Length: 534
Image (cartoon, rainbow, N blue to C red; front, side, top):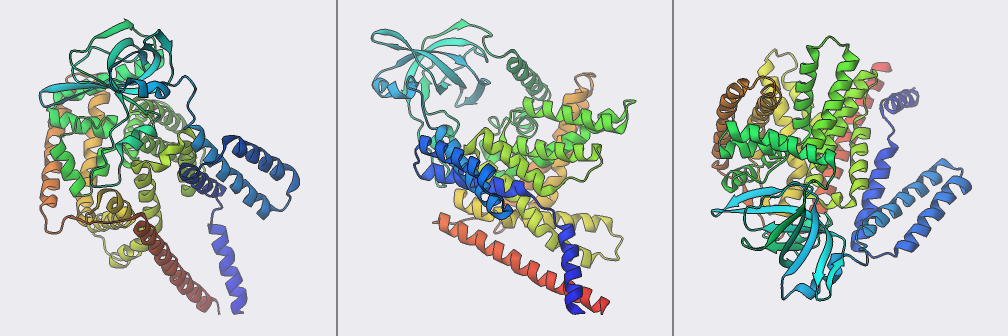
């Protein structure tokens, strides 16, 4: 009788469990990319191996387990191929001739292919942009070259996306500003295909040869982003507009250093980058706007999806934005076609897209923290939620339930990211658990008000002042709370000599802990189920 009930229980468990082949594909691809970064493989050999494995899977293998295993091996090899293929430079790449310009200046012609950033520091303005090199001047005249370089002009220059410019400066490899943590500025730029920097003095000759030579669509996107930034700068102070541009437009270049440090010390720096919470709030604002229109529910949801895609393009396609947008759109489309969305599939799909677009995203700190946060909530929140249900099982204290839920989510996230934060920044921030309970609800208000300013003030300009005054109040409350949290005893402390091995052991411990708790809970549920059916 007991064995029959056990089979029955396991059958119910299998019905609940959702199979997700995408997860295995993403993990294999990520491992392949990591292997490709640290081990050298011949691209031709990898390509032949991938083709052979694909043919072998399609023709020779019939068993599902072996076939699945071979597919994962193929994806692993593909990850290594994608990683190393990005490091292959063309023969005429500017990197190959950079060594000849170490002593003197280099004169280059190229196309500005990014938004032009202007940042004030020490009473000077630094103009930064990415340039696609077209030609470089040599002792024998102009020679055609390819490749991207980062241009730093120590002064204000009247340039914009799509300009073809002639500019001269000191060409060099990026300096490795590693600091205390493991972050490397050189690797950060290399993984964005920016292997060289052209440093241009304030009074260096700069000539704009042609205007508007880039993509017309991209130029309109940059103009729209500049228009939204102007909305904030015209109605808020410099510090306030810097925070709003970071939280809604993805531009973190104008956040004051002392404010950024407060967020880092309290472990709340994640709210300065556009994430799932930001995108879900924006989606809610779009949906509320479409609700006033006389269209059916499905059209409202599809319109919201279209506007979210437009928002993702305007704020730049950063990994966190793409991940959050893909997941939110999957949920909205699932509601539109009346199908339940699979959480694991959403996360896997977003990660797969990001890794295919740029394999080096796997090494990005923001990418790592983003997905660790999601997995931590998925793993640990259900366990903590049991505590909340036990405490408030018969209670009607709605506010208390919300606070405990926020505490459970904050604790789950902190447990997950603690290892990565300690490794990269040599810091542990216990105050994060409490700070997020207050800061996350305030973030919801800030994003809603900021988005309202951008959306409504475009149609009703006089409404900008109302939103601005509300934003000033909420932002000051938020910064004040973060300052108080940073002054709490043991709010944060520094740790030294955190190696990669320590981090691996930490996450192995978390995995074993999760597995042990799940085993005990399943055993307890099974015994309860068996006793009831004896």
